[in-house]
Image (cartoon, rainbow, N blue to C red; front, side, top):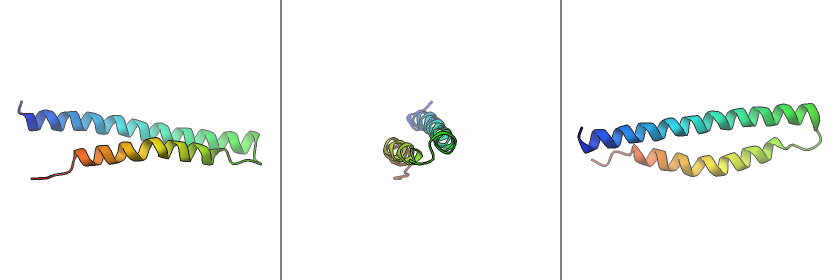
Length: 72
């Protein structure tokens, strides 16, 4: 396997991990909204979940997107 194929395979694995993070983020937001509406509707706690999740996801997204940047 050439280095380009190997790098592409590693990039796809990283993209899969990122997809899992995004899916987990949406599940966390859904659960936060559900719990917020059901138990404590006065304070919008789900906004904190969105902000903290975005803090972790945005840099990872930039990193994954730069892996697939074609510079040839």
